[in-house]
Each structure stands twice: as structure tokens, then as C-alpha cells.
Image (cartoon, rainbow, N blue to C red; front, side, top):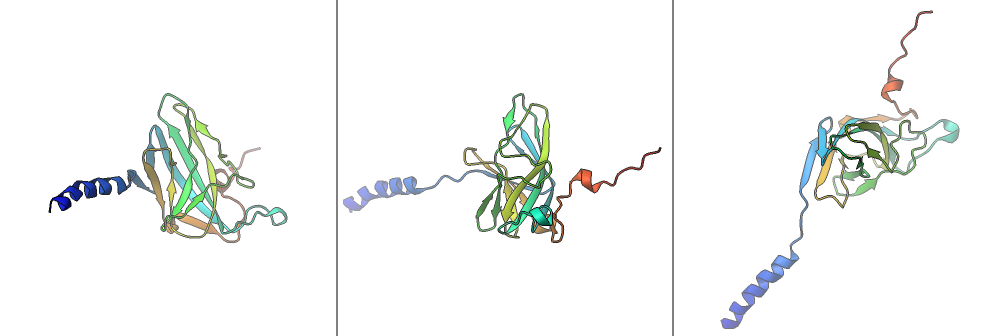
Length: 178
């Protein structure tokens, strides 16, 4: 009996060592302003493409190109880096941003920041299968995970188009008087 009583603290100590730390998670819906630290992210639109560019120079993805239009505002008093974004599917598989923005107008690039009281806006690109995703706005160095839910009905699949539709391109030109 005494020996079994001595094992109880050991069992509790072992159980305490084997617990994993779970990072806090914030989930926003597409269209909501997602805030993290001093940055506010807005997912403006998302499109899916089977290829990008003209027929002669078309880029073809392994799966589908996901083009996500975002804006990031900085409410802080220092320039802040914009972390690399990732798509995470329902099974937890991660799809990182592509480092090549060829044929994507207003591509934000991979090394980016936003100045105090300013907003950066543009497009990020992923290669992933057609599925439901969450867009992760944080990386492993952050203390919490921040996601934006991107349901399939938020996405616009462009089967026959190779042109990323930007707000500028979607607006018809205004006639001018001569």
C-alpha cells in the first residue's frame, strides 16, 4: 500500500509533463475585419483559376490557383511586417503562399510591411485543391492563431478566364466628353 501511494505523485508529474500547450485561436468570418496585434485584415474577395495568363504563356497550377484580395491596415505607431499567409483545409493540411506572382496584378509579394496609419492592399496567391479553407493570418512565432473562414460560396471559380478581376478591371470606363 505504501509503495502505491508513493507512485501517485509520480503519475501526476508524468501526466503534467505530457500535456501539450494549445495556442489560443481566433476565428473570423469572410467579410469581417480580422484584428491581430495592431493590424486589421480584410478579405475583400477570392477567386479560383485553372490557369493564369494568355494561352501562349499560361501558368498552370498543380491544383487550382486561389487568388485572395486583402487589405491590411496598421493602427500602430511603427511599421509592422505582414506575416506570410497560409490556407488550412478541414483536415489541417497547410498550403503556403506562392512566391511567384507572375500574371497576378497588384501582387503583394512575399516580403511586405505596412507603415503606421497606412493600408496595404493587393493579392496573394496559393496553389491548392478546390475545398473549404481557413486563411491563417499568423505564423508559428505568434502567441495565437488567427483565421478567416473562407467558405466555398465566398469563392468565385473562373473556369474559362485567365484574367484576375481587380476592382479597377471590373469597373467599366467612364465616357469622357470631347
